Amino acid sequence: MGNISPSNTMPQLSSSSLPPTMATFSVTKSDPVWVRPARDTPSGVLEFSRIDSQPAFRFLMKTIHVYKYGEEAAKKIREALAELLVPYYQFSGRLTASGEDGRLRLLCTGEGAGFVEGVANCRLEDINYLDKLAFEELYHLIYGDPKEIDMTPVALIQVITIIDISWLLQFCGFIKHIVLFKKSRRRV
Image 1 (cartoon, rainbow, N blue to C red):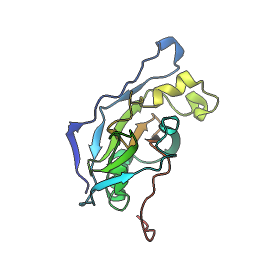
Image 2 (cartoon, one colour):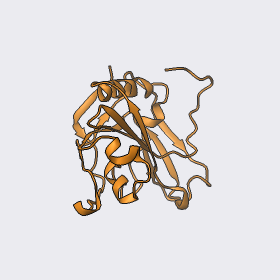
Image 3 (cartoon, rainbow, N blue to C red):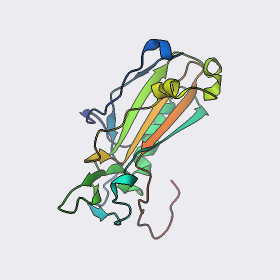
Image 4 (spheres, rainbow, N blue to C red):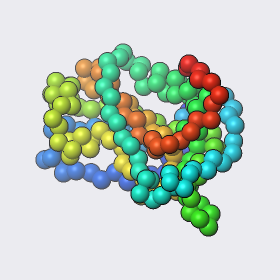
């Protein structure tokens, strides 16, 4: 199993709170923890191309996926993430814009991906299966952005339990041209 280290909490990322009148539901979230790869991974520094290093391309991509699953979904996702971070060890590293040139670099540190658990006080039917929700309402489901890119985790996974045991999975990561220097694909 992967190392889950609650003592190594992530640096606080900003998360503005919306006035309660703007939301039809609320979400209670845990503090982020690091989920480390299940086994040792290579270390090193990967350079981004000059194009990928441009400040205009430095942003976090957020997606929301909804799945139905049983009561231990968060635990199983956390364990699977630890295994997945072995062949895709780059996602357990940190991004930095360092050096004289300020180019973006990926530090393969094996520190782990961020993981957040949450509980929503509604059913999927109550929020129309996320269809036609205003951004202000969806914002309750999303973990905040870091203020700057330096030492940002490459991946953050958030699992939210909704009353009817449906699961909302948010994958927040720096989804760009991160080359996974693999000679062959491996199923995990």
